[in-house]
Image (cartoon, rainbow, N blue to C red; front, side):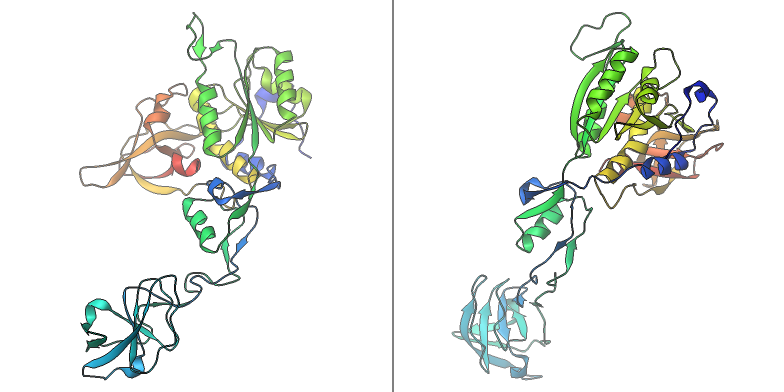
Length: 416
């Protein structure tokens, strides 16, 4: 069992490095194994709960790859003109009769190849005269024929457990005749936000108040990952109200996420409530932005307290909450693919914390991709997340000059 953190010593606790924090967080994420069966048209972006195995070959029989004539290569007069009688017509969806010697079958794309035929010659390569065709074009056995099982073999796993279903996978399932799929149920995430200064958009902005942007950012991030949201709204800045909100949220969710109240201020009640009600496994990370991130469990439900600053909340969600949710969903891929790109900026002031700076890829004068960064990287500058399309990861105590190779992660990869 993880030893709870003693809040009396919390400010003196060493900051947890990024990789160590991520590994620790993911070690506590266990896939939710409940599943449901849904029709194909409702399965987009859902997660496969089991392997899908094809019960048929695709295509189920040899078929023509184009419009032309099915022939037997043994009938071809090598080096001279070949003339054959056209004795049948086979369209897609119908089956022809066995081909006889010195005969051809008019055939169309997708139609089953008749017995004895072993090649299809394109219609553009023959001359027609009544019920006969003539050609001198070389023909190779098997040409223009799609073999049975060429795409999918019976008994083959065509979609693996843990796959997030795209349009391609839905089409693949349909191609083997599956009308429904067994998918994992959506992860239920409870969210609430702390801060007496917060008000909802649409209300008058009184002195000392700010609009609650984190609620809408977090809702969008969770929806992009396919979660069901239980939104408890804004909670008053008291320990009692925070405890009640956590208690309510943990009764009906797989994960609870908050924003704000996890730092060391007198009004930061979330961390204290978490310690009183359950276990605090981790707090204070060696990253920037996003140092104050609280992770623990209450009532056997995972709890992640994000920082209140808008950029810090966005960054820590991308870096920690997204892979955590993906593991709860049982996905096979948790982390985004990184890219090594060329820096188009200067980062002159190294920090002792690992930094994740908002950046986007742009073309330079030579049409080469370069990463540029938003001019203001403050943790309250939400515009930087809208302007950017990814993060540049800057290791501890590192400076960057234009032309240096840097590691880039795209937002679309993180949140897909």
